[in-house]
Length: 260
Image 1: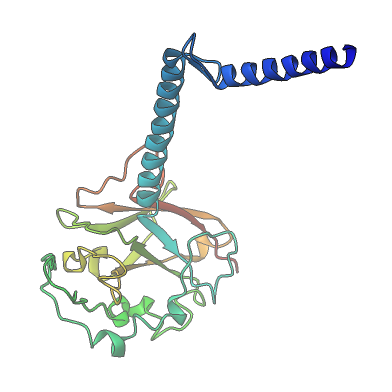
Image 2 (image 1 turned 30 degrees about the horizontal axis):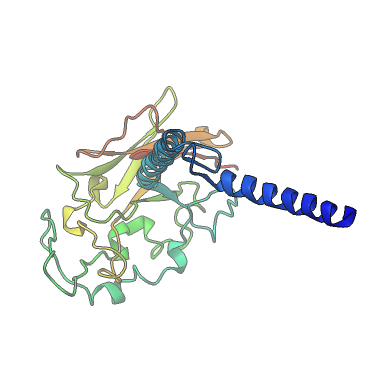
């Protein structure tokens, strides 16, 4: 009898544990699920959704700024200037995409007009010949001006799908110092012709090449051995370049030093 009574008590304890576990999952008397009422769960779900979409919104805004932060950047001739700290780099000297022989296969587009081709299954590519950069093309001078102490800096706009800049965009550079620094632009006046816009994406526009602007810094001997800070901006269009919260929006700043 004693043994039977002990078994009965153990069975009762097991049943009580099962009942308490079931009540924790869902208690029909209080309507609680996992120890919380529907109202309590509703508040937490609301807070979770609010937090999730707040983070998603901020992430989306950051991504948008990131795209435009790369809108204009410094291209380094890495064969001539081993600058390992430059994140965005491009070796024009080793890029065959801009060679005149390849560009001649592309189309001659209307100068000063957008090349709109939304309904075209195969997007044509406008010619941008390397020789357009003249003294900064690397053709007459393989050192791109570095050998003579008057380096060429190549600047381009990042590829942004669907972008159609209004006005007449061009690149303008200034040296951050008391006296002005003489510069030459190629193409003339640093123009970014509208015929190269819009861009339709890598799949639709696989052979697209964006226009380049070369800036030749005409240093004199008085400028040697002094680090020069130069800022280049996109001017003449609706593209922003003066946002104090984003120092890289529509502009780029770089430093150059020519040593004797």
